[in-house]
Amino acid sequence: MRVLMIVVLSLVLVACQRDQADQRTNDSLVEVAEPLIGRHLGDLDGMIERRQIRALVPYSRTFFFLDEQGSQRGLSHTFMEAFENHINAELGRGHLRVQVVYVPVTRDRLIPWLLEGRGDVIAANLTVTEARLAEVDFTEPLVRNVRELLVSGPSALPLNSIEDLSGRSVYVRPGSSFFESLTALNRQFQRDGLAPVVLEPAAAHFEVGDVLELVSAGVVPYAVADDYLAEFWARVLPGLTVHEDIVLREGADIAFAVRPDSPELKQALNGFLGNHRAGTLFGNVAFERFLRDTRWVMREGEQERVARFRRKADLFNHFGSQYELDWLLLIAQGYQESRLDQSARSPAGAVGVMQLLPSTAAELGVGDINELPNNIHAGARYLRWMIDRYYASEPMDEDNRLLFALASYNAGPRRVREMRQQAEIEGLDPNIWFDNVEHIAARVIGRETVEYVSNIFKYHIAFRLIAEGQGFDVSPVKAGL
Image (tube, rainbow, N blue to C red):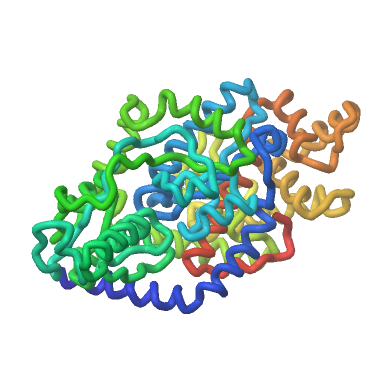
C-alpha cells in the first residue's frame, strides 16, 4: 500500500502540473499533430482517396497503449485493426490498403478534434448521451446495457443508498458521461431538498484506471465507473468496493462516434459491428484479453515499458540529431523492421533493431551492430546515406525524399529507380511516392514495400503523439515528415 500511495501521489502531482500547463500542452499537441494528420472533413470516399481513416483514441492501459516491445495494443486498437481488415476486404483494395491511423489524445479533445477534422472516428469507450448526440453521430452499440456504478475506497464512509451521497465528494472528470450522470443526480437532490454531491474535478488526461487508483489509495473516497471496468479494476487494485446497488445510469450504450457529415463511414462501421460487437466471438475474445489479463495494466509493468522506451529513445534521439533525421520516424522504422527487438535475426543475416547486414554496417564505418547503439547508429547513417546519395538532387520535396529513401532501405535503390522510371512511362509522377510510384511497387513487388513505407508513416504518427503526451522533446528536425 505504501508503494501504491507513492505512485498515486506522483500521479496527483503530475496531474496538477499538467493542469497548470493545459493551454501550452494543447497548443503544443496541435502544433505537432497538424502536419501529421491534417484537417479533413467529409465522408468515407475522401478517406478512401487519402487511404487513411484517423481513429481518435485515448492513451490508456486498457484502450490504447504500447507494450514492452513498443507494439500498439488495447481494446480500441484491437477493434480498429479488425475494422481496417474489414473495410479493405469490402473495398477489394489488394496491396494498396486503406489504413487506420491512430491519433492518441486526451478525452477532452476527442469530440473537438473530430468536429475540427483532425480525426474521423472516435474509438474510446464513449457512452451515448443526449448531450453528445447534439454534436456527433453514433454507430450501432459496441456494448449494450452498461450501468454506471459508484466505486468507493478505504477513505469512504459507508453508504446504504444513493441518497447517502448527498453532501459527499465524488472524483470525476468533467465532460465525461459520469459527470453528466452526477449532475442529473444533483438536480434530483435539489428537487428532494438534499445537499448536492460535491463534484471534485479529475485531470483531463485521467482515465478510469487513474481515477480508481486514487480511490484505492484513499486519496479520494468515491468515483464512478462503467460496470465492466469497475469489475476489472476491483480485481487489480486493493481496497475498491463496487456498489452494484448504487447506479448512476443504467441501460447505456457504448459506441463509435463519427461526424454528422460521415454517413457512409457510419454505415461501414455498422456493417463491421454486426460480427464484432460485444457478445460476438470476436468481441468476447477481445474483451476477455484486455479485461481479464491484468498484466497489461499493472503500474510496475507500465513503468518498465516507459523506462525501456526512454533508453532506446535516447539513442534514436542522439543519432537522429547527428544525421538530421526525425528520431521518432527512426523509431517507427525500427518498430517496422524488428518490433524494436535487438535480438531479431533474419534468414538473410540482417541483425537487430534496424535489420542491417553486418557487411552493410562495415561499409558505413560502423562497428559491431550486435550492440544496440551501433545498430541504431548504422540504421540512421544508412537512411541518411540513401537520402543524400540517391534523392538529394531529385526534384521532389523533403517528405518524398524520405519516403523514397525508406522504400530503398527495404527494396534497394536500384529497384526503386526502375519503379520510378516505370511510373513516368505510365503517366504517374516519379517524384511522389503515395498514389504514384507505390502503385508500381504494389504491382512489381507486391505488398511488402508498400506496407513497409505505409506502416512507418502510420506508426510515426502514433509514436509522435504519444511522445508529446509523455513529455519527450519532439522538436522538428530538418528532414521531412
